[in-house]
Length: 214
Length: 286
Image (cartoon, rainbow over all chains, first blue to last red):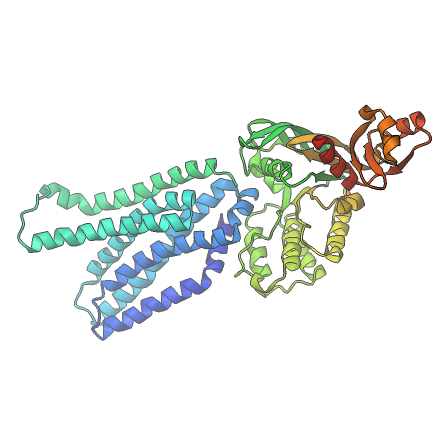
């Protein structure tokens, strides 16, 4: 499994480097006031959503899965490797973006509190985890091309929904208010849904992959 | 001599094609050549051994262990070379070695590095700069690096030039010097198998048309070369298939020694594996 993760990192070395450069470029743009620092959080989602899809695209191009399934890693190892790689990418994206945000906050370049930035980064990471939980089973069953469509639909539904509700609220249209207790536990609940969804997704993918024929 | 691989009554039904009751075994210290025309079931058989497709029936054991219940352990004993190099073009041989060292339990860095040197493969260059022959050599180095006891090769030598093919066949011969090692190689380049294989299994339309020691098969079968009138007088049950030309006829004889006793005036030449394949195919059409 570690070998398969190493393979993904090496095969995507160029793309990962470009994405890290992106974070620093956007960090610079935030410094000059072109963007809010929260944009760095969005880059976590870009990391976490594009890299696993690229990894599967490269696997498909090389027909790698056929070989990987024939090694001792087997089908289970391929799926586990892909999920761990996704987690690693989200974690790394989160760590780099968060590190940058907190440093800039500590040196007084943003008014946002470091703790708020931590919550922003974690919320972005959680959301990315949840979207990946939806995409990965499709990715492993249908391949990168079809999964990209699912990815876009999921992305539009979540972010479109958020924009819609925000717009409605701004226009003064009354929206059903969640109970107070739900608002209090919502960060924990959100975290549990994201992590739980990712775990369930993992088992679904294992089931899908176990039936796959090469 | 223990069997390295045992395939027993293997069945896989795709609807349009069925691998039907395939049985053969590969004894330790030997090379088994799996031959057959395109679509005969060679790759399906290998995929079933590697559990890349689900079998519908039968049993497969590798060194006495079931390939499904002991899948991980079994795959740790197998080095695989498929019909093309399946490594990513961006990777270098060194990176592939590092990756596989974490995948195979008995990975031997020295052995892998030795084969890279032996095959003159640049260790630091990405695979996209490699020719097909170089990629296949790399796949072979990776298979040897896994320190397998059983090597499985699916059309691995197809598309390679004769010099590279010969080099690779030499490696197989060296590999089976250890009686605990064995090779299963599928190919429709029968001349390669005539050089290297000890046993042959011929798959025809998803079934085992014949299996056995190569030398025995080549000694038993024969090619009758005669005139059309001579062919008409021969008992057809002794023949597998025939080819009638303008200047003469050829036919595959099942048992050339028995045939020679019955028809001493007719000439029966030794056969090549290719003749057995071609005439068996023709036999179907007649």
